[in-house]
Amino acid sequence: MTLFNKQLIFIFVYREQPMRIGSSMILISTISLLFILLSLIVDPRIVQPNFEDQSISKKFIEKEMISIALVTFISVTIPFFIFFSCFRYLNLDITNEIQFYVVFLTNFFMVSAIIENLKNLVGRLRPDFLERCIPIKGVCTGKLGRIKEGRKSFPSGHTGTSVAGFLFLCLFLNFYISTNTQRDTRSKIFKCTLICFILLIPTAIGLSRFYDNRHFISDVLSGALISILTSLFLFNFYGLKLIKTQTPETQIKNLD
Image 1 (cartoon, rainbow, N blue to C red):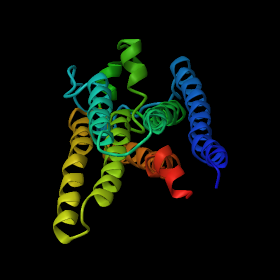
Image 2: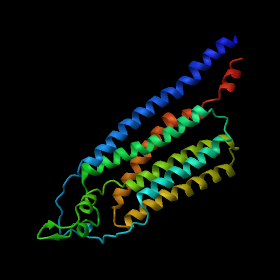
Image 3: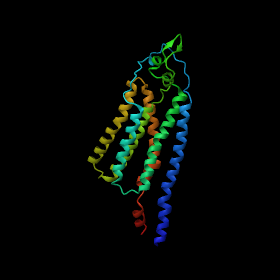
Image 4: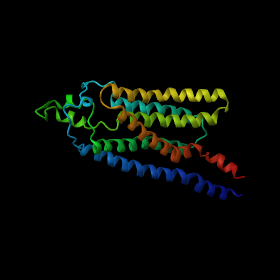
């Protein structure tokens, strides 16, 4: 096979896939961002509260255990640092590496778009709604912003965000460890232990939302489920293809 033919095959086989994935991610991210903006300007569905309902009579805790800003920060930076470190040991082209980061970030946009719009559509009252509402003669007299947030219980955004980051990381580590270590019992135990330890982070974040009286357990589980589905979809259909792709030098060599 001539060098010219090898180069042609390289161009169409190697470069085309990341470009297709990049275009798909830009499209998904753009649509997700538009829906996120929509969720910011649309008010949540108004559900008339039952002022005798004990399930929405929990104490309003002013200071949360962990803010959404901190959740987002650790859910992005910790996986990103581990990805970057692992990629230094993988024979991976820089184009594929960048595309993988784009897929990772797209996961956050997609999860956020789904969860924030579901909050508005469902309008479920938070466990601490009545303390936000401060009802007098059947009318809420509390702060409008606080009352509005009190109508966004389902599903949990904190949980969805944390699962989006750390589950994606676990899927990556499962592939990375499986392909870079011997497939013996010790390696499998190490991999399972590491993944279980990492998943304790989103679990703790989800439980904190329950103890802060911000969500019901069903809200937390629903936020996690949404994020699990989007993470599995984006990693298996896009991310995995990128980190499995060989480098240009290896591909051309294999054509001989």
